[in-house]
Image (cartoon, rainbow over all chains, first blue to last red; front, side, top):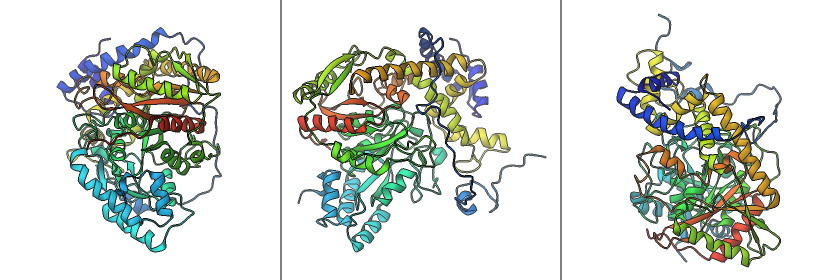
Amino acid sequence: MRLCAADAQTIATLARLRIDEATAAHLAQQMASILDYMATLNQVDTTDVEPLYSPVEHVSVLRPDTPQVDFSREAILANAPQTDGEYFLVPRVIA
Amino acid sequence: MNDITTYSLTEIRDLLAQGKVSAEAVTQACLTRIEATEPKLHAMLHTAAPQALEQARAMDRLGPNPKQTLWGVPLTLKDVLATADMPTTCASRILQGFRPPYDATLVARLRQAGAIFLGKTNMDEFAMGSSTENSAFGPTRNPWDLGRVPGGSSGGSAASVAARQCFGSIGTDTGGSIRQPAAFCGIVGLKPTYGRVSRFGLIAYGSSLDQAGPMTRTVADAALLLAVIAGHDPKDSTSAATPIQDWEAAATPGSLAGLRIGLPEEYWGEGLSAEVRATSERAFAMLRETGAELVPVTVPHTPYAIATYYIIAMAEASSNLARYDGVRYGYRSPHAKNLHEVFTFSRSEGFGEEVIRRILLGTYVLSAGYYDAYYKKAAQVRRRIREDFLAALDSCHLLCAPACPTVAFRLDENTADPLQMYLTDIFTVSLNLTGLPGISLPVGLGADSGMPVGIQFFGRSMDEATLLRVAATVEAARGPMPEPPL
C-alpha cells in the first residue's frame, strides 16, 4: 500500500500527536510495510464469523449503585502538572 | 548457610515462617545482590531499599505470621503495576515521577500476604516491545550474556529473578511479555487465563489481552504467587469468579500417564533455530518417559496470528493511551501555549518512538473507512484462532510449543525494522488472542550460544493446575538449571 508523509500527519492529528516532516516520511514508510503485512488477513474467509473482541463474552457486570469516596481531592490533584489546589489548570480555552 | 539468595521462593518462605532466618537478613541479601548486579543489568527502575528494610525490621519485631503465605518474602514488580508507595512509570517519560494514589489489586494482595517489595522493574515503554530496548530509561541486559536482550516486555522482571535480586516478580503478558523474557533468561513465566488475575491497577495497553502473572525460578514458586494474586475482584469487570485452586499441590512432579499433549505442527515446523529445536525436543523425551502421550495437532490459522494480534493490540493501545493528555497526571510540555498544544506537545514529547508508531497504526485501523477492513477483520480471525485452539484442546489436555524461534538475540539486532521485531512473537501472541493460560519454563541451554531455551505449554481455560503439574514434572526430569555466569 502507499502511505505518504501527509497521510501520517493526518493520522497524527487524529491521535493528537505532532511529528516533524522527516519523521513523518520515515513513519509512513514503516507503517505502509506493516499494513501490507496485516493485509495477509484478507486470505482468511471470515464470512459469517462473529468478531471476537474479548475472551470474556456476553457478561454484564452490575454493582450496587451506592456512592462512596475512593480518593480525596488532594490525592487526585497530587499528580497534576498544574492546579489551583481545587481544580486542574490548563491554558485559557475561551478568550 | 548458603547465600540466602540461592534459595527458591518456596524454600525461603518456609525458612522465614519457621523463624530460621529474619526478614531483614533476607531483604538485605537481596539488596546487596541488587547493588552488586545493577551496574551490569539495569533490571530496576526504582529500588525501595530503606522502605523495604524498614518494613522487614517491623515484621521481625512481630515475628512470623502463619496467616501470611509470603511473610517476609522480597519480590519485585514490573513498573506497569500501580503502587501507592513507589513511582509507577511504565518506563515512559510521560509518567516520569507519577505516584498512583492506589495499589493495583494484585499488589494489595501480595502486601496483605506479607511480601516485601524491593522495587519496580524495567520494561518496554507501556509494555510495547519484545526486548526491553524500548524503555525510555535505557535497556536491561540479559544476566546470561550482557550483550543480549533479556526479552520483553517484562525484561527487567526476568533479569531480576534470574540474577537472584529477588525471589520472584510479577510481570504482565499482552502478547508473550511474561513467557518470552522468562525463556530468554532461563526462568519460569506463567500467563494465567484471562480473567484469573485482576487487571485493576495494571496500566492498560491491550485491555482484552493483558494479564499479570508470576515470574520465578521454579514452577512451585509460580504456583505459590498465583495463589496469592488470583481471584475475583469487583473492580475489574472481566475478572472471573472461578474459585482458586490448590496450585502449590498441583505443582508437584508425578506420573503423566493418561495425559495427551498436542504438538501443533505450525509451531514445530520451519523457522526454529537448530539449537532451539534440539534443546526443546529433549522435553519430548522427558514427557514420554513420565507417561504422557504426544500427538500431532494443527492450529491452521497460526500464520495470521501476528497480523491479528498487532491490529488488535495497536487499536486498543491507541484508545487506552488517549488518556495521557498532560492535564491530570504525567508530563506536560513546557512549550504548550494553548490547550491543543498541551495535548499534542505533551504526548509527542512524552511518548517514545515505538509507542507513537503503535498509536498511529491503532488510530489508522480504527478510523472511518478502515475499521471493517482491519479491526473487525482481525477480530473475526481472532475467533478463528480461538476455535483452532479450543478444537486442539478438545482432543488434548495441553499443547506444547517453543517459546521463541531463537534464544535471546543481541542488543540492536532487531531494532532497525519494527516488523522484524514483531515477527519474533510468533509463538506467544495466539495465546493472548484466545485468553487461555500458558507457562514457559527452561529445558536447557542451547549448544551453540549457551543461552537458555524455554518451552511453553498451553492449557484449557482456567486449568492452570494441569499446566503447573506438567511443568513441574518436566522441571524435575530436567534437573537444576546452571546459574547465569554473572
